Length: 120
Image (cartoon, rainbow, N blue to C red; front, side, top):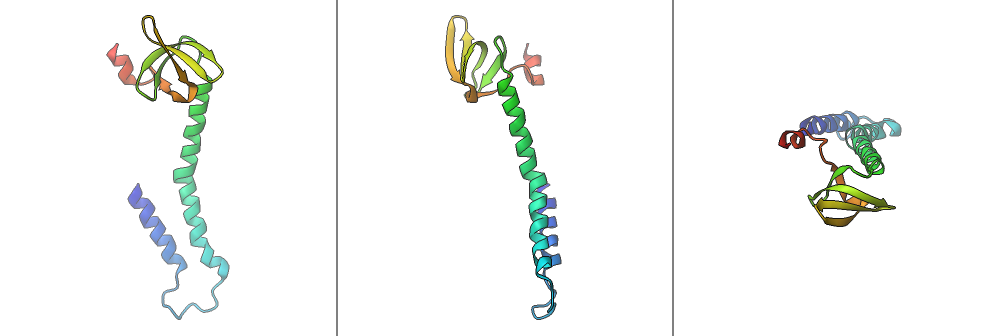
């Protein structure tokens, strides 16, 4: 994938360059910007758009957390949601042991991976 991006970027750059330093006289200034526009479009579809999609999915997951869900914190603690007050979530990590965690500190729902289901 990286090689494809590199080869495409070099090819797009070379298309916009004149073959010899003194030749190509009368070229359009708009044609000089075409490689940069194409590179930006490639980066948008390969990097920026997937990041925005992943960020949106994470925000929806964090908004959808409810009482009783099993979650994993960014520190690696597994727990069950006991209470949610604004951006503070109280997790039960063991019987009788609870911790308060910021909503942003939740990395995902436990049991959504195939690995967690196999462990049970």
